[in-house]
Image (cartoon, rainbow, N blue to C red; front, side):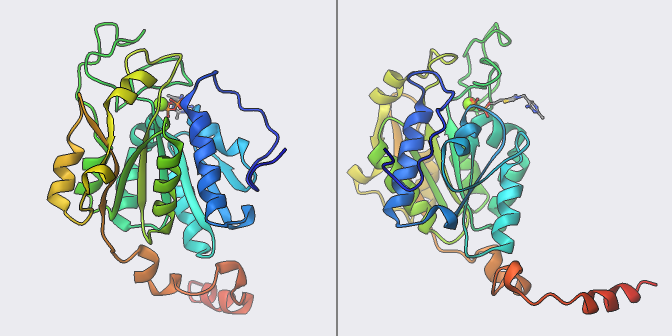
Length: 284
Ligand SMILES: Cc1ncc(C[n+]2csc(CCOP(=O)(O)OP(=O)(O)O)c2C)c(N)n1
Ligand SMILES: [Mg+2]
């Protein structure tokens, strides 16, 4: 029986115990809690275990190339401002292969929500290190352990002037659903980095490992408007790991700044082949 309008009947091909199940539940809960209809939502993804998520949802979806969810989502939002547009995928997909798009979509403040399922490993390809893998993490490829420093999505986003920077944990569905709702409500680019276990290929950052470390910023009455404090808090990673909204600041979205993007969706605008013909004539 369907519990939300976003349910479909495709059985997820994820390992039992995978954090993606909880992210899927939280996302459906967040969207239905906002009273959105499946027709009002578009979810774009790339390649990876995380990027399979749109297959398991009833709404508009686009599953494209590895690392390329953000440009697809950006284009879709710019031509249709009536759609809630999200990009989602794994840490490899978003911060590795898609790292360039991550940077520039933040700079432009494209009005989309990004969900990065951060299991700190390349899961689909069976356990190579990703940009967020811990130094020392050993894999079949990194046999002597990862030698390079971790990419920190939150400080990276803050340094690029992101206006909504958050982290949550797949093990806390309520918290994650709430953060996703706030991210969707933010006008501009919103990042939700989601810590999650990969039960098959990450034996270091396990569910237990995260569970014993994460604590909520809400519980320490966090001021989300203080950017230097957000930056410092985002650097906290070790015995304690903060989750919640680190930073939130209103900033004009790209679509608010570029005049041609204001107004109706492209599909609802007047189509004039004659005007296009006249334009082409100029180049003859
Ligand atoms: C251009 C390109 N490079 C590499 C691959 C192989 N590949 C597929 S998924 C993946 C990594 C996925 O890791 P992540 O995004 O963290 O997702 P997870 O499976 O961990 O959820 C890689 C390297 C590919 N499909 N396309
Ligand atoms: Mg991953």
